[in-house]
Amino acid sequence: MVSKEFFRVLDIIAEERNIKVELIVDAFKKGMVSAFKKSRGHSSCRIEVNPDKNEILVFERHLVVPDEGEYEVDPELVIEKISLSEAKEKKARIKVGDILEESVNPKEFSQIAVTNLKNVLNQNLKNIEKENMFNYFKEKEKEMVVAKVIGQDDDYYRLELGHGLTTLLPKREALPTDRFVVGENVKVFVASVEMKTKGPKVMVTRLDKSLVTRLFEDLIPEVKDGTVEIMGIARDPGDRAKIGVMSNDKNVDAIGACVGENGSRIKEIIRALSGEKVDLFQWSTNERDLIANSLQPADVLAVTQINPMKRTALVIVDDDKLSLAIGKGGQNVKLAVQAINWKIDIKSATMADAEGILF
Image 1 (cartoon, rainbow, N blue to C red):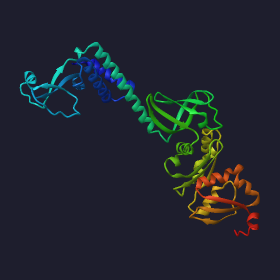
Image 2: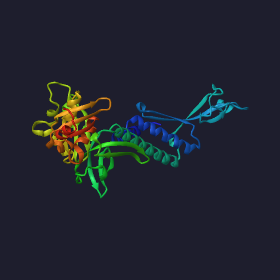
Image 3: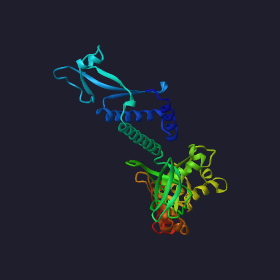
Image 4: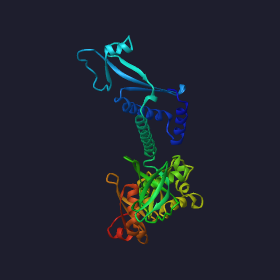
């Protein structure tokens, strides 16, 4: 059957649905097989689509078997059988085990078969769209994406992710300081992507510390190109993040690059995090410097009793800096410990003197 219109529509569907023509042709073939089964009562057929000739060919297929006696057939071969004598009436030069193919005009399909073809084709196209969408967002897993707020209720923000997909950001996965309104763009971290019956399901959050890393990569060119590396990060989502950075170029100041001129870069990151504070410290391969730097903004008098095997150390600070080093509710030292993966004990100078600790 020759149909220029079919191949014209094929290109239109491919463009509208953003699906490769080859995938649509494959879906059409499956639909034709189903239609053939509806029309002929079995599924032994081969579909050939030739876009160059605007041609669609359907072949009914039979396996040639002996007129009498048993003939072993591959159980995986789903095909109707025809006796050798019947086959020779259609094609003289044929033998047992051959496949007899006869051309069938698709126009002979019943209306029921045509309807079935349309249904199968539409379902196959929907499945292809789901698979394409899943693959697209699977590549975004563990990455940051920009979504648009299209609604909210007491428990969720409804987000539009693009490509015709929406998701929910549970407010328990948002920052305590987040106050989004409909129409606002928000940066979220893709925690996981799963394929469900109705299509891909994308789970997003704003609590993961990797969201902060992705923001640095997105907004700071030196981090994106690897000149400046984030070596350690810890976070109390919505309140404070502590980040250790190191420069791989002696001419580039890691902290300066992250802060930006007049604080422009770090302010943009803080804005994206709805006001969450960001503490930067200089990463060091020297253990004493690393531990001391991680406790900033508190100044450290000494780092002693270092045990590299157990990754433990004692830090001495001025009496009036003890509360700053520990932080409100122990936050500063907790984040420092998480960021550098060292256990840190902190004492004031007076406490150290009283215990006979030399520093």
